[in-house]
Image (spheres, rainbow, N blue to C red):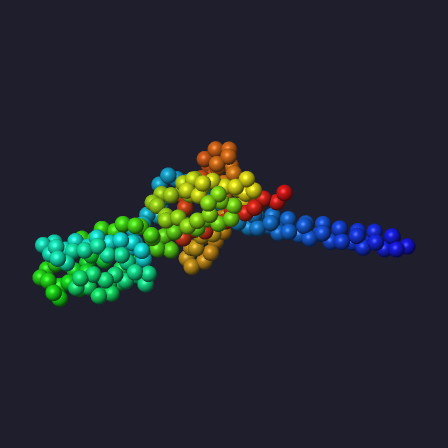
Length: 215
């Protein structure tokens, strides 16, 4: 009698496990169905961007005919820069040209018709200009967007995907018009089968999630 109760209890546990696994599987299938599809990469992405200065960047500040004011500075973590005759000038989020015009305005208090050129290096990039890759990438990381960057370029940057990745269930989370949209992409088809139709254009701010396969 006790043996019958044991087998009955074990059977119920096994059935519960099967039901739980089935629900998780169905949930995964529904997620894939909901995700939208992106068109194949055009090779000429609509989005282009000019580099914006970020904290940690090194700036070469050249003031024509005023070498004593020309200098090299690093943008502070709070996005400000400090240089001779300049105190806490906002730099992060501006292009080098935009910052040069701001510096000219500040220097005009001390110099006559200053002409400034700013050259940025280091290229940390603002968060809005980066693409984040998480999950089963060989090297999950944040990558600065480059003009006309595609999914293939991105996967090469992260060293490919792991052997445990469900590449064809990869999702790109993209913010458009202040709303997040999910797009399903086929990384396995792209990098393992060479299906170039699976290549898509990337955009700054994208989040790429590469899930683990269910075995």
